[in-house]
Amino acid sequence: MAELKAGLQDVVVATSSICSIDGQRGKLVYSGYDIHDLAEHSTFEEVVYLLWNGRLPKRSELEDLQQQLTENRTISQEMIDLLKRLPPPQHAMEALRTAVSALSLYDPEAEDMSAAANRRKALRLTGQMGTLVAAFGRIREGKDPIPPVPKLDHAANFLYMLEGKVPHADDARWFDIALILHADHSYNASTFCARVTASTLSDMHSSVTSAIGALKGPLHGGDNEQAMRMLLEIREPDRVEDYVHQLLAQKKKVPAFGHRVYRTEDPRATVLRRMSEALCRRSGQTKWFEMSKKIEDLMIREKKINANVDLYSASAYYVLGIPVDLYPLVFAVSRISGWTAHILEQYANNKLIRPLAEYTGPADLKYVPIDQR
Ligand SMILES: CC(C)(COP(=O)(O)OP(=O)(O)OC[C@H]1O[C@@H](n2cnc3c(N)ncnc32)[C@H](O)[C@@H]1OP(=O)(O)O)[C@@H](O)C(=O)NCCC(=O)NCCS
Image (spheres, rainbow, N blue to C red):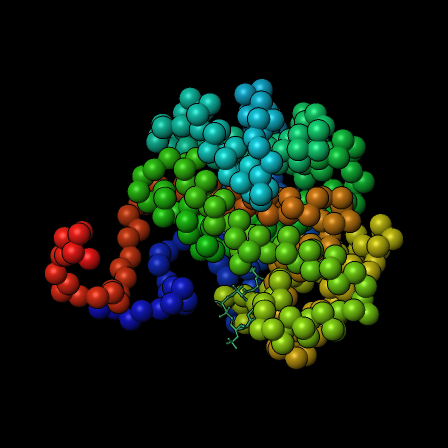
């Protein structure tokens, strides 16, 4: 039997040309392009094209994709009614998981596994994810959902649908950058789930629903929400030391720190730190940035553990006015692009994903009839 690696740590399970991570050097690359370069020069829509096609688009190709995404943002009245009928979820991600699963019931191509139909479904899911999240966010507050606006790009349109006002251009651009940074991360847990489901040749909606289930967990996408809850609980920068020391003394994990792959700074955190500082300053709420920085300094100094993607996105989303329990859903608004890219790649060269387990249970037991046990 092959060597067992708990949590598949360091195990290479497949090839992929979508995304690479160098955990030693802190590099994240989408189809050959460094994440820092993309964050500075690109847009979310351009990154979606890159992830789906393995190359940057020409201008006309980007305009086509922008138009197609825009045309596919609207969700049906049936979906809005469904969101209205849901009982209040215990975790907001339950609503998104249910909604995405339900989308397939209204998608005439749900079971069409042709490459062209799967591309169209990727487009619809990516276009609609933000609309679903914003609609859910408003409906549960007793407000009407706001329809998407074609003239706004994906990032600005999401903030608009959530709050009902066109965001400041700086806020919209920073959020666009956050979407770029969250778009893909190689074989992370949710993407792996999506690929496992796709590898059975199950449909795209099922694969994405699997991914959402994995993203929900506090060790993955649920962590950005935990990071903000921690900041809210700490309340003031001068309480950081006591709070974090207490967590560490209780052997608890500090949200938004540590990573399975990075052994140095998560390159997304480098950009998000600047984003948090800029947005917290502009909104006059610098304490959230200051607290995050203090926690980071303490964790590096005392534990040598770096912040990950979730630390500075938490405070940035907070000052953008995004409700805290929606943070993991906002992750999905971006990551849907990566999930669908991976599902398409899986379908294009499929091999059923079916690993082994080392059995550690009892052996050679004799069956005992039920009334003799
Ligand atoms: C991300 C994460 C799940 C990686 O897990 P992993 O690769 O299995 O690593 P482990 O959980 O085994 O951690 C390795 C060591 O670092 C410590 N560590 C890791 N993350 C920590 C954190 N956030 N706070 C405090 N200690 C941490 C562990 O306690 C462990 O210490 P030990 O060897 O003395 O027992 C883990 O770092 C974590 O739980 N972080 C908090 C949640 C989070 O930020 N998730 C989002 C990831 S993008």
